[in-house]
Image 1 (cartoon, rainbow, N blue to C red):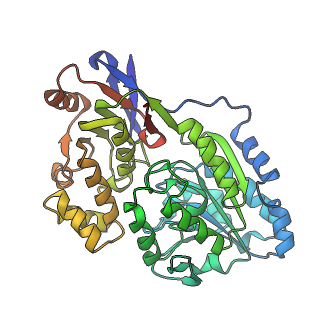
Image 2: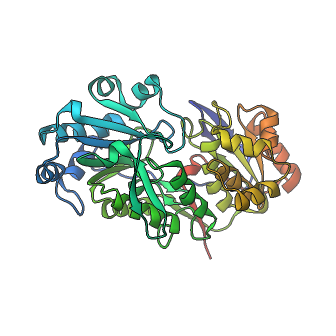
Image 3: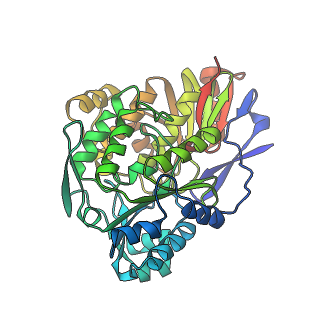
Length: 419
């Protein structure tokens, strides 16, 4: 039996006959009673914790609107999400020229025209204004959060009559889950606000799959409420295009319903960790660069034994990614340099280097990618040219009878070991 591992926009294969003592861990495929478009329509007609979008528009006498949308690094089926959402706004009386889509780039690179067309489609790009969020410009302070931090977000969004956010709810390596409140913080927040929030990732409660008493997530929720998000439309996907669940309504209540669904689908129990974990990010764009691919490592580390080996397949067609992340990597001589810098001079981007080094404390990492070997070694990983070579190297360390776990879509799984 051969298992496919997504790698960029193609697939690698691994033959289970070559993997003694191997287990495959992946989230179950849900049985769908409704198709994607029907799920969205049903959610919008039955919002959680709010009135319908059209009723909100009427109640607020809204004449302009902002829709916060994900960037290209977060696969979102906007071909299904945006048409009914935008149509509902127009039916409520908001003209197309008064609707702005803000790309929630956080600190990521801005979208090009080609990116926008690829993510949102040519028709939407030609009909509506699309704005890249800039974490250093066009900002407005909304006042203090409970921890004393000044909440500064995108001015266009802050001044809109109607603020709607969209996104995908899935596992997140320190916010617990993505979606919902993350469209505001970090999505359209100022750089210093994002930095302050991300620095909290060092708290032991800020971890994959944990959303209760998670200080990072709690602050994100507070920020979304302070930004006065009127309505959210979030989906859970089972592939790049297929929607398995959809919620609409109040920013926390609706999001929590999606989180509870994700828990059932994404938290996978297994009897014991493995000596070797083979993980794929799930292909492009989840493995667009190392900055994004790191998320798969946080999933894989939950399944590997202390002192084990993680084999990560991540194309990284755009290199390491964010420039600060790259600078931290290139200027560190050992993982301890990263830890010291994180605690003394935190910078956005550097937090990803910190996350990788935390994993290296537990396991070795063999990386199959398109990165130069030097870049891989700079991250204190070992470059490999193919999966066969990687397995041979791992078995030299752990023996031919080493236990193996294969994770075809690691970013969709939180492994929980049975007591």
